[in-house]
Image 1 (tube, rainbow, N blue to C red):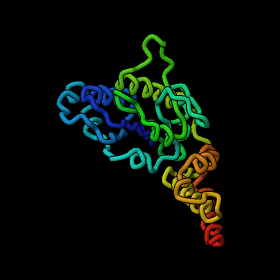
Image 2: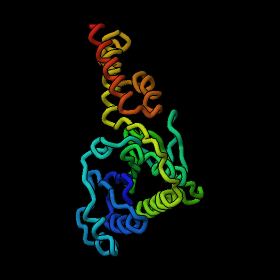
Image 3: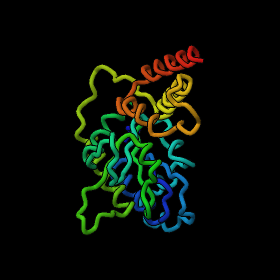
Image 4: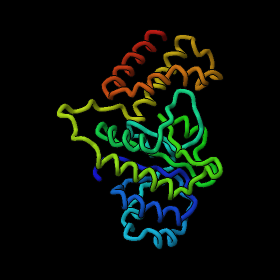
Length: 239
């Protein structure tokens, strides 16, 4: 599959899970994935389970933070059962369909937490939207490799069912890095204007809540550059 769809595994601990996940990715035509601070050191067990998918296993990317892993992505969805105001909760099928659709605009990412505690609060906040498997309450947790297979299958089915792309190209979406730049510029303008009055209020919920509508709006690259220019000009005038 040539679509720029990336699976990101945060702090994977179990080598067997990595091997089984590599095989699942290849089963579904996927190959791009990144491990963030993996704790599994001996990959021999992974190689035993990555049957005919050794190339996918060995080709995994590495990153030291979620920010680094998704910096070029235009949409990031995290797998978590938590409910967060302002973030959509999507089914695995809806995630597969939207990943395929948004991949036409640029790289997209699906993020999985570690086997013990899942995603941290900060990592959940970093994602644009969230998804969870509607499991039975008697056994809500899913093995990491099984979760990778389930979502990879939905991506596969969505890609097979996708209609031909529209004749007119979609606008280039803003990357996660560009959105972060806009958020920083907004913070600088609010500090200069006196809305954020001291260092103790910077980065607090007020800033996140003010920026949340912009993040949800899925700014294009052009719109993000325009916001940056406007906010920088405003900050200079206020100073």
